[in-house]
Image 1 (cartoon, one colour):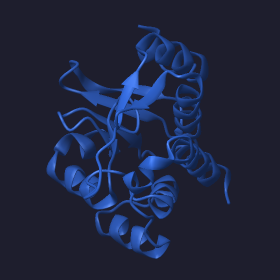
Image 2: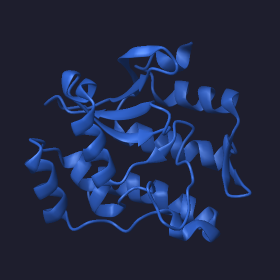
Image 3: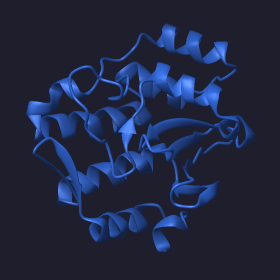
Length: 185
């Protein structure tokens, strides 16, 4: 298992283990070939997306249960994310792919630029962030941040809902994502 795969799998599996009553929250992964085929059909080749969706196919939509993955929303299924990507020109304009959504118009997106390190960007019309802004330095740091938030109690699942201690979340995120200006505000 590659480092990226391990980080994402470990983070999500730990959340499931900690809150074992929510196992049905995450959709099963998709065969890598199928993920690759669907992404290529819309002109995207990206190993990070391949890793994400071959491990878990998001948790929204899910017929059993709805639970936010982080304070920014739900981990989108591949088909839902593709629909969003094709529907809103902003994703192509800024060369990014939506992976998390608040379902109110806010998205955390993976930068698709062919760089060595791909940041995660926040696009939030609701929060008046109309030009995407780096929120996580890279996908591995995103996983570390989410994991640390659950480990320290910044994120807790209470009555099947995510509760967020915003000050703890900001402190953790700021310490892990040193290049992100978002957490410094």
